Amino acid sequence: MSWTIALQVASIAITAFQQSKQAEAESFVDTRQAQVSNEESLAAQVEAQQKEVKRRREFEALQATARYSAGYDPYGSASFQAIRAENLRSRDDDIRALEYQGAATHKHLQLETEGHMINSRSARTKGQMALGTGLTNIGGTLLRNVKPGMPTAPAASTWTGPTNVPSGPTPY
Image (spheres, rainbow, N blue to C red):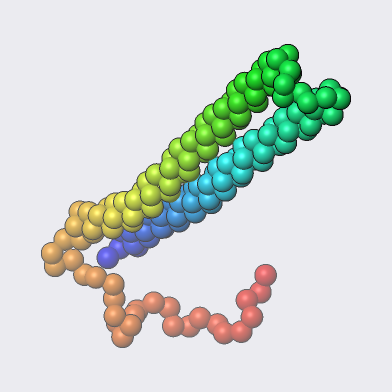
């Protein structure tokens, strides 16, 4: 095999290897991004629950203040009951909005996680295909350039190169 064919084969192998490693790195990054998105999704759920608890506590504090400031049994008062009902509706609307916001954020981040995992699998496949393509190209190069009966690399015992190479340090 001539040195030009060897260079072609080496070039193809190096390119395939680099593409494979690049795809492996892309897969790693996408897997990490999927993990981050998943953790953010879980954090969004917890945050939504905390906001809901906070809103319920605010409502209870508001009701306690209203009962205290009334100075009488407020549950017998129609106006107090009307204000309480309005506050309950407001609280329930706020809680539904918080739940919706939390669910929407969670869904968005779950979809983002799935997208990163798909990208990761795609990158791994791309890397495998790069290696397969490289091997195919190497085979094609060899088939195209190596003819039957063509001498291959010389054996060590048939080397006819220079034998009077000086030994010792090379002067620069």
